[in-house]
Amino acid sequence: MAGSRTSATEVIGRGHPWLSLAPALGVIAVLFGGGLVLGLAGSFGMGRGGWTFEPWLAVLSEGRVWRALGLSLWIAFASTALACGLGLGAALLLRRRFPGQGLARLLFQINLTIPHAVGALGILWLLSQSGFLARLAGGAGLIDGPAGFPALTQDRHAIGIIAHYVWKEVPFIGLILLANMQSIGDDPEAAARSLGASPFAAMRLVLLPLLRPALIRAGAIVFAFSFGAWEVPVLLGQSAPPALPVLAWQRFTDPDLAARPEAMAIAMLIALVSALLIRAAFAGRS
Amino acid sequence: MTRLTLDTLDLRHPGTERPALDALSLDVADGEMVALLGPSGCGKTTALRVIAGLIAPDAGEVRFDGVSVGHLPPERREAVLVFQSGQLFAHMDVASNVGFGLRMQRRPKREIAARVAEALAQVQLADLGHRSPHELSGGQRQRVALARALVLKPGLLLLDEPLSSLDAHLRTEMRALIRRLQRETGITTLVVTHDQEEAAVLGDRVALMLGGRIHQIGAGAELWNRPADLEVARFFGGCNFIPGRSANGAFDCALGRLALPRAAPAGEGCLTLRPEAIEPGEGENAVTLRVIETRFEGLLTRITAEAAGLRLEALMRAGAARGAVPGQDVRWRLPREALWVLPGV
Image (cartoon, rainbow over all chains, first blue to last red; front, top):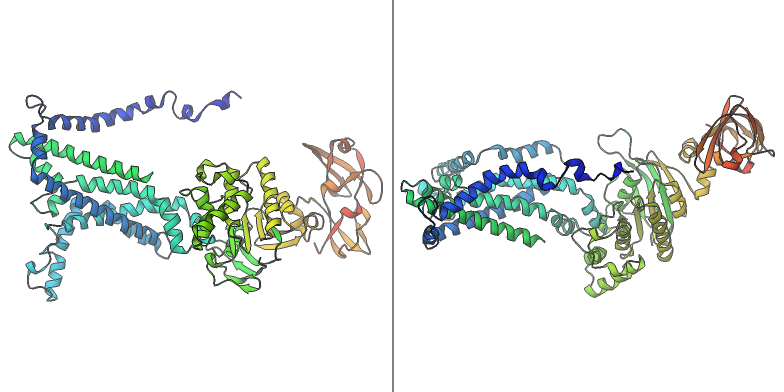
């Protein structure tokens, strides 16, 4: 029958796929690509009288930038690793059927709806040296004053920032993995058990490898966000060195407009490092 | 090799009205291959999972060689379950899939490699060890799943619809392969299927499961021709049920007195015979009926005819069916050996 020769692509959208994608790609190219191109051009001094490598040279030769990059990498790696580990553990616990499972899942996911800035203020209120935990410790006579409580916010190791990202991203990772486990089902593990694998071996050798692609994808999103976002490090981070996005933001809002190209260069550096690391993570997968 | 006993297993899935297993009892002898046959939803896959230890029954016992295995987790049971979909591990190549169970037993690498090669040769896939599962055809995948179970030399092999995902040609081939491997290895095997023909070909005995329990177990032909009850007869396509009374080797009913085969149950009941057993012409047990309808069904023609308010359906080849014209009378012979009585129906 001639009618049955119509292929799926023809049914979904006649013509070349690129043509069908053009409207969506156009919007993305203008909004996202345009911003990137303008930022890149700005970092080479465009709009300020000619092309120059000076902003890049200034940024790359500045010790503060490298320290900020190191801090941001630490924040992003630690947050991603902890969020992936805890999110995986939570998903493994929550996939079992138990009474009140629906409520447990709801509570687990509820902080997905809370904005980052609000969450960061909550962390500040909870963990700072004048925060809730410090007051509890003081009330219990464990510490003499605010200074006796360990510095968990505005601290050298960015513990407050990492705590916030972990708190915020564990449900995200968990949600993605739970959906993934649902589509995988119990059968692969059951097959492994029947072939002689212990519950732990079945999880480690069969379930985890099946979850790996989803975990890497979700982890890449967490990494990109915690590496590039500035509002949480602004609220919870120390000032010297600041996280790299905070440095870019400071340069960008500097009254001295001459700092703008440097801000652009730092922003481009963030995008570049982030893209390279995520690319490496995906390449390592296959 | 292992003798399998299921002793009055009960299981109800939470939130369902009908039990999945209802006092299910079954004995599979050492080295025997039994086909567990039933329509979808009759609980046969659930039974397989209970035997494998993947689901715990609400009541009753599973015994291997007479010893209860209820307390043993799946990995410590002498049974290996081959899933309907094969469930090959997509992230491992074929050889690692087949060697998975041996790896769990912490066998030396060299032994694993040798036994994997042997198992792949058994299922005629000797050269495909390095392939990844998604590079295999459906039939090859199913054979790898089979090799992955056989390499462990289990006491009991559980096959869940092993042929249902294959096309007709591969099915015949795979059926022969399963049959041959079972004969060669002598592994006690329980194979679940919804396909009557498959059950008859594969099973030394066929166990018909309906509504969570075994209705009848025996050689294939026995279930077809000597059904234990109305539901068994209906499942195998029985459509002729004539009420009456059986006594002294004869059945009295509206069609008259019909001679019965030896050992037919006596008493009030229902006479049944398969539609394809009816023959046109004179002889013993010949009756006159008025043809109501004929329907062409490919190789065979289904003829509905009536006498004394009773309807009979016959399936005949084109030549034999030619004499049947709606509205006219026909003489049909109901062969004595094809008759059977369902007592108390």
